[in-house]
Amino acid sequence: MHGVGCVGLVLMLALLGGLAGAAPLPNAVTGAGKLLIDANSSGREVLRNIPVEAAMERFVLKDASGRQVAYVGLTEGEVGGVVFIDGHMAGTLTRKQAEAFYSCRGFATSNRNYWGKDAVQWADSLVQQMNPGSTVELVFSGKSTMQSIKSIVDNPVLGQIKSLLDIGTNPLNVVKTLNRTREDFKDRQREDALIAALGAVEPGDDESKLAGILQPQDINFIGDDLVMAYPKYSVDFLVQQGRVSLLQQPSFLQLARGQAALFYRPRVQWTRCTPEAWFSSMR
Image (cartoon, rainbow, N blue to C red; front, side, top):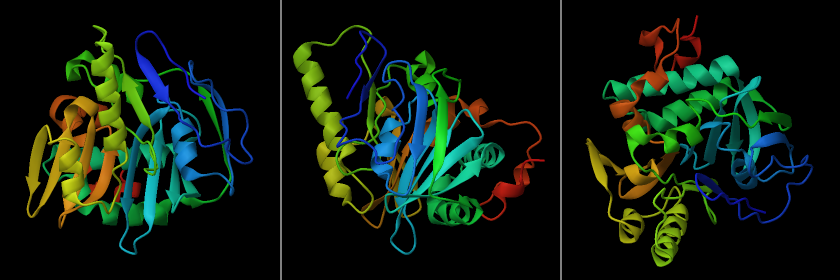
């Protein structure tokens, strides 16, 4: 199941099969519809099927115990975000919680304290603060907001970005925009192959695997760690001790440099924007 537009966004769903217990999937073109997540749902497929019009951010990492924690923040609805642990839904955030989680990590990153450096602590507090549950129905209007992944990747301020999410084993999916000047067919084929290869990288993979696919377009050194950044795709890979530990899209480092206003919320106590207190930062 996939939808292709002449220009703009193309969703590479590449579904492995329908979601068990799921309602009809959101429309692949408009992004409108409902998505029911239950205990039998595959986290990877759920993340694929959340429209980019409704997705504010997505990341995946491994926590201190080795579990894979994936999160998607949403731009609309009462449910602000959904947390997955080892491929299965573990809980949700309220709208207020999700906005605080987003803004506080953006605030930290904008103040040269890249949140990914403490990603395990942020993820631990995320799991502690989530509302545990294995079933939720998400409703999507199909409308995009300034903070949606779709709006960010289409923003000319950031250039012609092809945003990368998952394909294959990575619990995120591939989303890309067509070059508005219409790339040559063979160039597009090479680009698709590159996106597929990058999308196969996941937490725990060796740094050399990522570098072998594509040399980073930007590097941020953070102590002994580094962020291999690909602004063209609006994706960051945090590398610690020679291995990928975090994938995030859109790139908070990129937004902090050019669109930090996206992290703003009124009535936020910014001094509380830490892994230990972010959830109490919004009055």
